[in-house]
Length: 309
Ligand SMILES: [Mg+2]
Image (cartoon, rainbow, N blue to C red):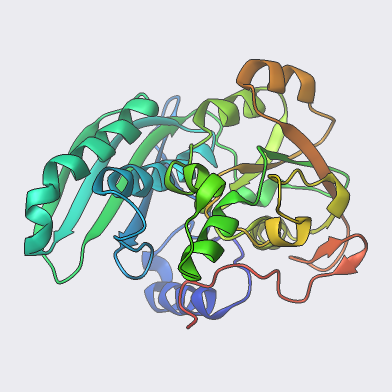
C-alpha cells in the first residue's frame, strides 16, 4: 500500500498510527485530498475538514455568518491545493441548542463560500452537540491533480498572495485586542481554486495550501517529495507591519505553494488574478522534508500541530 510521506510531529505520528493499524484497508493517505480513479477521464477528489468551536475558532471573534463561510472556505482550499474543480460539499453540523437560532446566519455563510467556489451543498448531517462543529466534506474533479509528492530538485517554488495577516490577527485576538486591519483576511480566506488550475495548466508540478504556516507547509511538501526546499526570507511578501519571520509561521492563509520545473509567468498570473505570485526559493537535493531559510535549516518549521497542547 502506498501513502504520501508525512512530516514530523505528534499529529502526524497519530495519523501514522491509524494508517499502520488499517494496513491494507487504507490507501493513498497523506495529500490535501484523496484521489479516486473512476476509469475513463477525470478523477474524483475528496477531503474532509472539521472546524470545532473552542479548538479551531472562537465564536466571539467572528459572526455566525463568518464562521460558516470560513469553515467551508478552508475545506475548499484542499481542492485548490490539488487543482481540482469543486463538484459539491457535504456539511455535518454538531449543533448546541444555543446555535439553533443562529442557523440562518450560519447557513448564509456556508452559502457564501459555496457560491464563491461556484459549487453547491449536496447533503450533510445535523446532530446535537455540546459545542458547534462544522465538518465539511469537499468533492472535486481533476484530470491531472497537483500532488504534494511531485516536487524535484531544481524546481522553482512559488507562493500566491501576501502573507502574515491571519497570524497577526490571531496574535492580537489572543491578547484581547481588536484584529484591526488584519481581520478581513482572517475571517474571509479565499480558496485559490481558479488560480491553482491556471498554475497546473502552465507547468506547476506539485502544490500544497498554506494552512499550518508557510515554513511548515513547505516542509510537508518537501517531506512528501523526498527533497529539501531553500527559501529566501527577503522574497516573502508580507502585509504591512508583519515581519517575514512571523509570516513564515502564519497559519490559515489558504494561499498556495507550488513547485514548477521551469519559471512561471508571474506577471501574467498577477494580471489575471490581481494577486501576487512570488518565487520564494527552489527545491534542492537534501534531507527529505528539510526547509532552509537563507541557507539555515529550520529545526521545527514552526507549524501548527493539531494534537499538541
Ligand atoms: Mg491542505
